[in-house]
Length: 85
Image 1 (cartoon, rainbow, N blue to C red):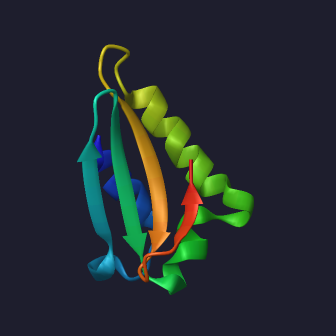
Image 2: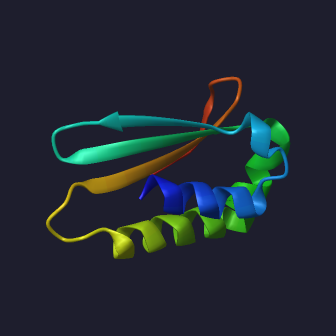
C-alpha cells in the first residue's frame, strides 16, 4: 500500500528527492506521514484538499477488509502538521 501512496504523491510533487515517508504501525491502524517541502504542499493537497481526500479514498478502497486501515497525514518539512485526517 505504501507503493500506491508513493506513486500518487510523486505524480503531484516536483521535489521528489525531498519527500519522506514515515510509517508507524499501531494496533488497528498503519499511519503514513508524508513529509513534503513547502513548495509541494499545495500541489499534493490540492484545492480545498481534494487531492488528499481522493488519495485517502483510493487507499481505503484498495485496502483489503481483513487488514489494518491506513491513515495518511501530510506534513510540511519544518514539522508543522498541515493536513491530517
